[in-house]
Image (cartoon, rainbow, N blue to C red; front, side, top):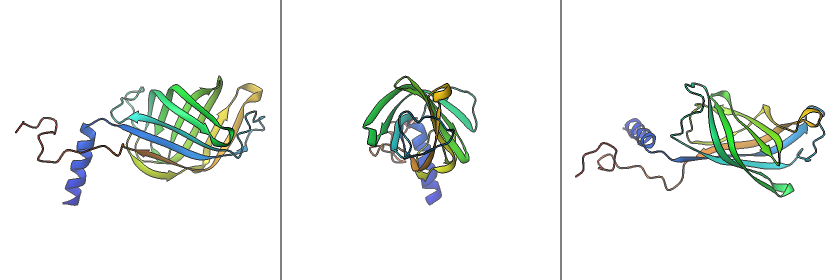
Length: 183
């Protein structure tokens, strides 16, 4: 009976689009390429957050284990530097796997900025998941260009994707379900 209820819940969620709130928190590690780290990010805590609609079609279609969701709005916060930047029109790539990746490419204060976070990601479609630890090996942030390009490890952190707490799922006997006959 629990399996049936869980299956119904999953189906009901699939019928209703809702924003998934992604949050990546962590700490920038040491410079990996000898770059200048002009923003002094090494050792600094950060947060990257944003939302992807659960029904958003990927920009790259068809996609199976590697999907790009274009035109996302994100926020980058580097706590100790008091930097709080809105990033617009950012492509977000979700790549399923163990580890999978979440990757972004943006400009922060006109500087190219790329973040790749490795984690256990079962699907490349937007879906909620509890906080997952960032896999250190291969999780990086790169910013700058040419001789000023800096690559930093991400040394620790968590990633989560949550549905809004106000999300309600109709009861199985409700006429609120799509396609149900009114009572």
